[in-house]
Length: 241
Image (cartoon, rainbow, N blue to C red; front, side, top):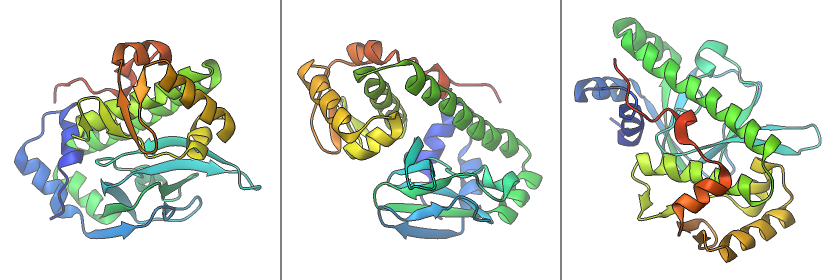
């Protein structure tokens, strides 16, 4: 069975889940696939018969214009089920592609149906995960529509850090931020040149350090305040059931 510990770590932030229940989910995952950066997990309009769980690596959910302009709408990290939406919809209205080399495990929809029929509680847990995606999309709209300058980037960094911390991918304020300046711009509605200037200002402010794909947060409270980051929309607090 594939190692789904990162997925389970995220779920257990929200629901109690026994080791046996975790093994049940893992036992229904069938095909493990390795992807290169840039490879598609699923393309807009493609009919898919499975949902994908990221075991390793990072991906992005996005839409493209006819001219090839891209708007990234969510960064997917290890432990994310990135396309549970395809279970009821069958065809997605957006694409998902790897930002880095990725390893994913596929859960066939027929196996998902059997899992839910045999264990109805999983329907609520997986449905909850899709609702969190929707909550994140609303927060991203707020971030792009109301915040300016460094605040947008600060919020994005806070989100990726908070989610990465849950799955054990942070180290005393240091974490992987696997986005090029162009991709940051595609997340936030900025040009690459503007992103470059804002990142320099962030480093000069003493809030963060590092370059490339590794960031160190020097002042967490300051970064949260700048980005107006409230993690409530991530629903990481424990729940009953």
